[in-house]
Image (cartoon, rainbow, N blue to C red; front, side, top):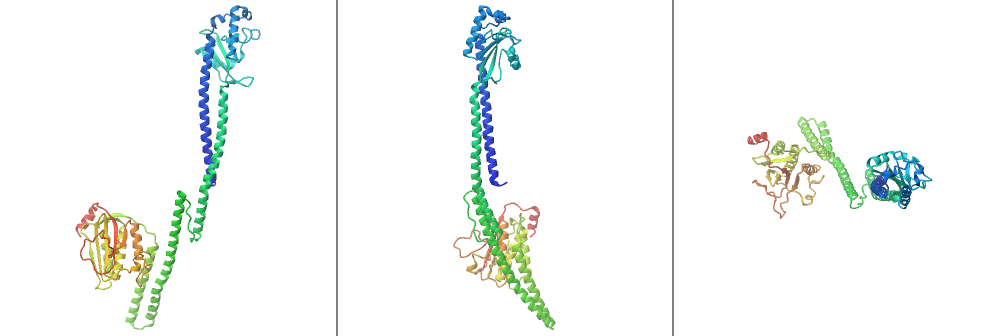
Length: 493
């Protein structure tokens, strides 16, 4: 079922439920209240009629048709006929439902005639004989009008007065019911129109955004997503535009990465082919060993390039925990020291004696420090690594005395495939930034030419001079004490 039809059905159903349910409840309450008031008034009418010269004890003495000749009976008959100014019919009858006197002429309804219509109101009569008064439900007379009987017991005798009155007071309620039905139909139509309008106002932008999604899925990314409006659909369209730009950027990076992969792999492969051919052709054992060593270095270079590309393309997941970052930093430093290019390259490390507690993934700390230190070793002959805790953050600084970062690359140094080296894919710093963001940290290139003071000044001495580069990484620190085993290890450092 389409969204437009669902909107129509829901709003129409709700409007019908609200109008019909509320109308029915209102009509029921109003009818009950009016009927209760009318029944009370009927009881008053019957009671008033019974109090005006109607003596039940005396009337019970009239049992034969011939008793209607006396003067008292005639006077009572006249009173009953005068009651027709206020009621349609009036009767006085015994417990056996036989009439004594009524508003009808005695010749038409003689004394002792059974009133058969009273058989239909047995419960109401029982109530009247017991409590002294009762009112029947409404019924339709021969003329099509609604009527009610009211019963009033004459004192404590076995004589009962019954009066018949119209109950046309319910007719306005019938009109009210028709009005409610008409209002329900009108509200349903209005709700349907409103639902169609709302659904169209929502469905059309969604259909346009669906076509945009299909266009993006088919690879047509050049056309931007038009912002629909300022509500949730507008936010959705803006999110889709950000997604489109991200897809375009990712596609450009993938294309560039493929081209870079082909370029970076081609050079080692060419060297491998050249050195392997030369090793096959030479008979000199030393020359062959030298050529095979070159082949091995080219293979290692090729593996490093492939590792960089895999690290950049592979999705990363951080398992952050509170730990002393000095341990993974020491591991990274040891790995770099093993492969230092020559004895002239020095690596100085300044870490505090107390733990540097930070929330991060230990493997990620090791990776970013290793990348930064390796870059620094390749750039200069003196490398300095320092760490300290300041303003709620753990700061790690890696500085070298090399030529520094060229001016044209300073703004793009953390972008993929940006490098000033002859070898390498330019992914190391891009990976560092991704890893730091994943650990809720950050990395920055410290610009010594900035007039702003350093917000995290290095507290350690022996800073390197010159125009070399300095990269700093920032982890979320903690004032919590380290676990007991970490404290023991720290004491034994």
